[in-house]
Amino acid sequence: MKTALSILKKNYGYDSFRGQQEEIIDHVISGGNAFVLMPTGGGKSLCYQIPSLCRDGVGVIVSPLIALMQDQVEALKQLGIRAAAINSSMEGGHVWETKQAIRNGEIDMVYVAPERLLMPDFIDLLQQSKVALFAIDEAHCVSSWGHDFRPHYTQLAELAEKFPDVPRIALTATADAPTRKDIVERLGLTDGRTFVAGFDRPNIHYTVSVKDSAKQQVLKFIKDHLGDSGIVYCLSRQNVEDTAQWLKQQGLNALPYHAGMNAKLRSKNQEMFLKDEGVIMVATIAFGMGINKPDVRFVAHMSIPKNIEAYYQETGRAGRDGLPADALMLYGLADVAMQRNFIAGGNSPEAQQRIEHHKLNALLGLCEAACCRRQVLLEYFGDKASPCGNCDTCMSPRETFDGTVGVQKALSAVYRTGQRFGVTYVVDVLMGKTGERTQQNGHEGLAVFGIGKEFGKHEWQSIFRQLVAQNLLQVDVAEHGGLRLSDVGMKFLKEKETIRLTRPMASVKAAKTRELKDAVAFNDAQDQTLFDALKAARMALAKAQNVPPYVIFHDKTLREMATRKPTTRDQLMEISGVGEQKIARYGTAFLEVINGYRVAA
Ligand code: ADP
Ligand code: ZN
Image (cartoon, rainbow, N blue to C red):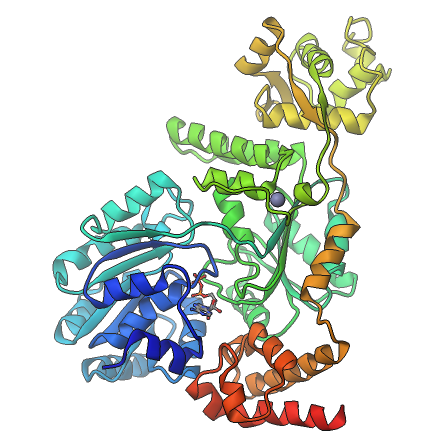
């Protein structure tokens, strides 16, 4: 019988298992149920792919997005594994053939959407065939607590009754404690084992900056990533269109993606993102789930996302291959008002809205954190961490100061002006700026008028953001971003509490991106030339087969080839990510590039 380790080596070309992979794989091979929580890029796929290959029968993989199944199937085929997908976008004849192959035991793995899996004819087919396991990918979709609930997923509980002897493994990268429990219960996995890996994504560098001119800030960030693939998340479809067009005008290869687009164009853009190199996808959150492109080098948020889970999942799409990647979030109080609006207008019950507001507060805490961003993120998920050295606050620590008097002034100004004005106005009052509105409102005669001249406009704005983040002030959505004191804010004034604040954040620092670049750059400039040549060869092979380049080899594998320069098949075999099938198909082509380069050099 094939062992898990021999499959890892021969098919995948990897030397050893990572983290808990081996334990999970052994558990499932021996028939156990499992719930696996592992960060993106942690290596979840192997946890069901290898058991599918080791156990008799077909591995059935439930995946929410049919558009992306083909991509996974293609990657498996390239490894010499018999994989197929069945979904509504396929022709009847093709589906029939695949079903026939399943019945005959000629397929190792099949990808299906939950609604298809649960159709009586498909269940019948599986009951007549041998099933190795069920893998439920993106398992958080089963939970209404999670942020991507899909009703069809809940019916997957039926699998336990219909196939009591087939192991089931559910996998996700995002789930806080209540969601986790919910998934395990809903999918009937209480008798199985739960594997929770740490959440850390050490190769991602986090930066949060105050939004002043969002487009310019993002442009500057992208310019440090010229030629890289990346994602720019925007809050609305209109923002997506505007930003994509603007980036294009700046000479960048940017494409829009949102749910309001014509379906054909949308899937064409997605395909270009997957199959070409260096495409920037400007998108709403509709984009990203199920995308397993390993070489996304950056993710930028033009506005804050809705909570930390969403942020972690969205940024998690960068750097799956383990190479350095970069995340930038721009943040301003107008976004906070907008997110609050979404929650209030989203007609979920009040209790749910309260949870969502709390989750948003936690995100604001991240934005205003004076300590390591990664620490804040990991602690949110219940992991302990020490300062990471790879985030903006670690690399340029923020100074703190005693903000008690400033905060008293700020809160008083909000209170005295009637708790209905936005930041800009209240700051004008504090700084004693006379104008039409302050005159009309009769605020120039207030005791708070002009009492805050010790700070500039930016400093005051920073103070107000921190007060919102710490929940002393609330942004009133009904009042167009009007500020009002929370109970915590009231208590602060009444009980004369003290507070420390951080100095305003600077915009994206040049220094930080330099270091990131160094981490990706080759020591030897000639290795870079060889790497580029290997990439070109890969692109040609990919184009010829109409597949994404990364299903041939990952960047990481090409980088290793560029530095180690193998000249024989045996040496090439030693490179991580080069398995038997890949050698047979592409060995000659890549050795030619390397040898040609040696001759030239
Ligand atoms: P996830 O689904 O958890 O996001 P993947 O399964 O896509 O992660 O794996 C992420 C990357 O790590 C892939 O490129 C995969 O080939 C690679 N990988 C997974 N396991 C190993 C391993 N044991 N050794 C080397 N690379 C691995
Ligand atoms: Zn840090």
